[in-house]
Image 1 (cartoon, rainbow, N blue to C red):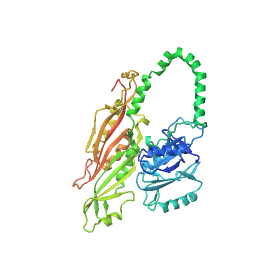
Image 2 (cartoon, rainbow, N blue to C red):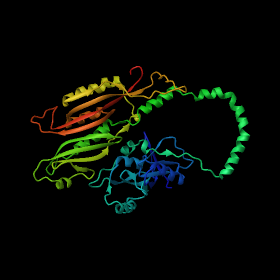
Image 3 (cartoon, one colour):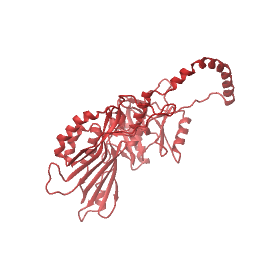
Image 4 (cartoon, helix red, strand yellow):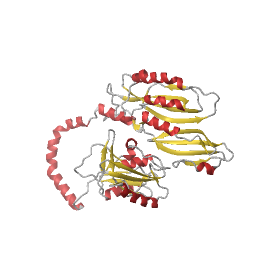
Length: 435
């Protein structure tokens, strides 16, 4: 196996240079684990039953890893889940990293480092022969190269390297049985004499620590939740700014984006306006990442995905409700003149699975242990006003963003032909005393 390259960041540790193998047919999970054990791997990664490939890692025994490890290549696959793309990126101290993704699966014999761009070009030439529709990120008519921060933000349970447990025996099975019986015969009486007086003490150690049990439960309540914040909100606005209003006689009517983990799933609807406008002329000017559907002779929909910049909620240091009422609300009050509608709901705690003790009874929640809560947030107004919100969006997660294009006679500070509507939640920290 190849030697991995590991980069540690503030919120995650990324591993580059895994060995990838394709998975064909059903039961990808079982097949992936079988391949991993056959190659004596210590870790593997695959994205559930529908995975198209499995990545293997063999860490040397002298390199223990206490932190969770995430596959950088699988993170890129999450960011570009459709089509065929190649990412070629220079990493200081490692060389040029090349990874290819086909329909959300890492391509075998990629996730490799090369000493120069010229050496990587030879591999690119081979990939183009195998995948004629391949797009190289950062080149004309292709999506841009994601930043390392965007790749890091894509870390999730589906990209985490799982440790492969198991002991590989060196002796035949009958010999193992004989050795086991011999060891038990020699050690069991002595072990029983040593452990018997300490059973009460051992039982005490088995009791759940209330504080840790509640911390685990609170962490569980944050699983699967992402915060877009100022960075993710800016990426969302840039997606709308980049939309063409007119395409060869077709006019934009509405666009909307909804989050899916660390991506936006977006759709733009266009209407045929000019007599000479045609499907052919529309297709000649679309973006390469768009998938187009013509719903009628006069209507077309463009569908695409883009990185959302979402960061796991558990990685955030949130403000509490009192701080938000003092600062965040004041900021919205100052910006309200630029929006038609601004609404913020009451704070509500996130549901927490109450931990149980050894007898199945609820464990009381320790005092002053911080938990998560949220408020609903809804804003509507001109697209041009949305940029004013960015400095105040640190703990916002958007559930839906919609852009509507309409004709109006008299634009104003609160009304415009391009109207943006945002729906989401503001996450907060709460303690039992204030929840």
